[in-house]
Image 1 (cartoon, rainbow, N blue to C red):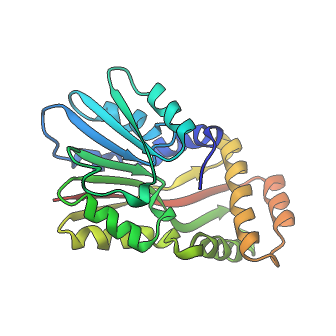
Image 2: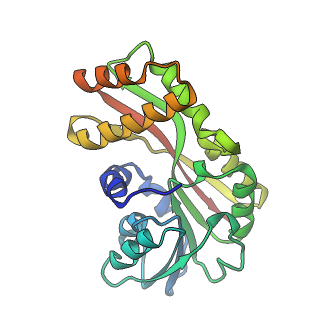
Image 3: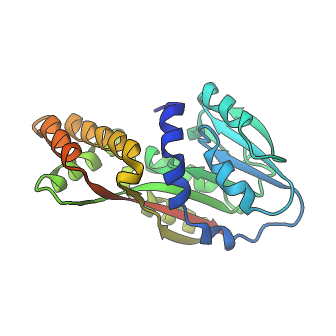
Length: 247
């Protein structure tokens, strides 16, 4: 699955507001230069959010299979932070690929993995702290409510689990996988809060959410529901989970 730079730019402010900054405060990183490996870096939004919150000199290794997104990420690193692009398939990462890492990070990735892939990720990160943010949690709360909200949510969650992907089960699966490696795990609820102040993101997210639900359940009245929601206006809390694993 790939994402456009435009979509990633649209969601970046909401991601930044949602992430659990208190988990960063729990990191006990060395005083020397840091090497951070960012998995599924996209255009580099995680680095732009996290780098100013970390001490000392930093070098980021940016992992993504999309060369266009990698080019964006390397070019848009925060001032004073260096970066190296590491193209490739994240599902095959090993401990050797992460050798030398002070910290492993990712954003909005875990729900796109299978349980064996999350297990391998935890094994690859063993002994290295990992800050894994914004995993889809499968819960959306709308105001005003609609009688079809639950049906669309259930269909969307089923769509996220297609092909053995974890979807909304990812936070619990990741916590178990890292704990099996001896890590202490902290979880935080990190919802997007969408409303008139983020109307463009809300509309784009809703269209994608409804589209996935209808792909899973073609009997759902997607166009009518979408039109009704957009015409009336709405606010929504879209639940995510941040995870910190540390030894």
